[in-house]
Amino acid sequence: MNVIRYQPWGLVHRLHQDLDRVLERRWQDEDETTSPVSDWLPAVDIREEDGHFVLHADVPGVDPKEIEVTMENGVLTLRGLRHAEETANEKAYSRVERVSGSFYRRFSLPDTADADRITAKSQLGVLEVIIPKLAEIQPKRIDIQVA
Image 1 (spheres, rainbow, N blue to C red):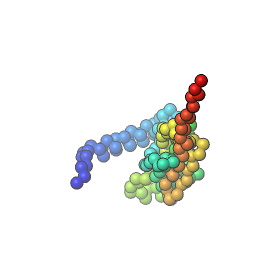
Image 2 (image 1 turned 90 degrees about the vertical axis):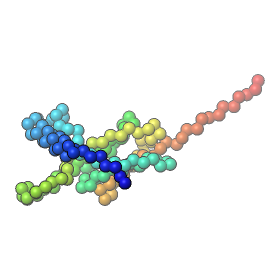
Image 3 (image 1 turned 90 degrees about the horizontal axis):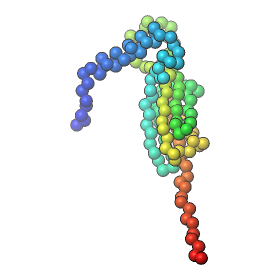
Image 4 (image 1 turned 45 degrees about the vertical axis):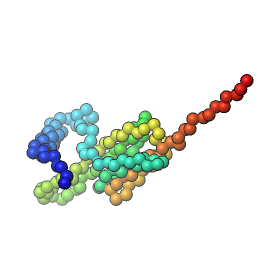
């Protein structure tokens, strides 16, 4: 039996946050200081394997050309944009749940990550980033000469 936490006001709280975000955008100037860092966050799985780390991010509907993966100072950054679908008559929607807009995620990597060999590919709406580990540096034994 799974225990599920009951949050009676969770939906109301989420609605309040969404309304605040929409109203802030409508009445404030859209510049870097007032706009949010991201409109949505892709779900991410990270696992460590023998020779590398693997990161999977769910980015359905995002063109791989709209995704930017960067590594700087031990921080891996995923940034991208999902465009809203164009419709002839926007009033025809009775419910819209799929979020569009920009996303931005950052991950601190361990010192063992090899930034020069990171690769990324996108397939079927899943971004896969492979982060190889540096070859382990073994301590060098220094022989002591007897005088």
